[in-house]
Image (tube, rainbow, N blue to C red; front, side, top):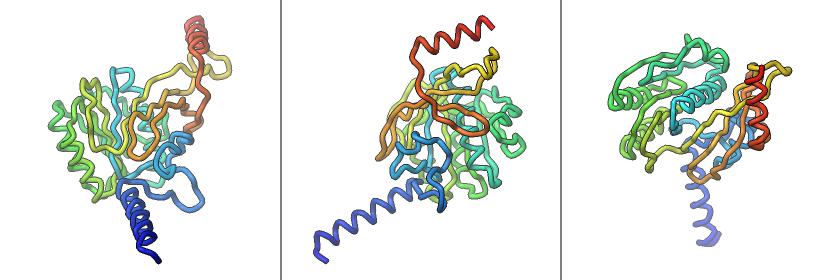
Length: 248
């Protein structure tokens, strides 16, 4: 082999190793997706949703924070389907544990901790992410700088626990060490069987930043225990659905 081909092979091997360190491990044999997000997963390097890394989700208001919690719970239902425990550290205390059942997660498999300060939450998140006995850790904070996010990323590189950091009503969206930055917004769902007020949760899923991937926006629905991509609706279609719900 020539020196040029040796260098090319070495670079390729290093790139694969780096992706695995960042959580982009191939899914089990015979499967193509990790969490069933369809086209969203295809936006990540090698089409793999990164586990064993930290995801950042920015929430501009309480409404976005609520639907973001539902979206995360849907992912947890997949990660915890073969057992495992999740730690959920919050600031607001607004989470209603029985509601997790709607997304396939039994609340008794989630340990809930409520604190009052970002500093306290970040310390607990970091310590929890070091615990190999956990499947995932969800934390709610208002602000987090690059140094703090780097500490969290270093923790998961050793434990391979997956972390989800919800930035609730954050005023800053500077650079962080997280593998991906998301923004989840609620969308009106299609009424089930024409019945007003009954519809499946639907979100506009925005992947704002992803290392070595392709940011984008998708419409995703939680339907019969699974994520299902749906075609984006025109503004007039969304307005019509809202009017139907109000009339009903």
